[in-house]
Image 1 (cartoon, rainbow, N blue to C red):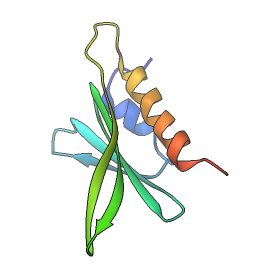
Image 2: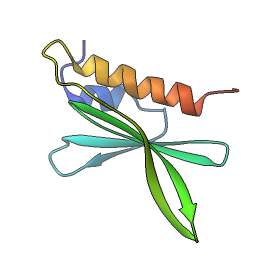
Image 3: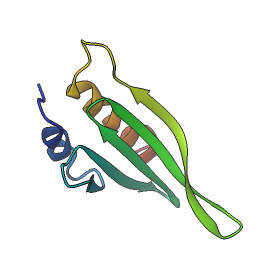
Length: 96
């Protein structure tokens, strides 16, 4: 069982490029690609959001394609980890 966001971050090492957000390490972003598409997964202790990079008239932006919040008392950081891994498998590993 994972008790800290740092444990989730460590378990995701090797799945793409990881970055902490903020000095307190209260959230992180995982970047990965599948073919020409680029994805990012933002996560903290109660939220996971996946976005795909898009381009419109030469301007790049991140478009959110899914989000999950963990607000029930029985939710844990294991749920956050499993959701991030599902995103990586669903959008990054298909066809490999």
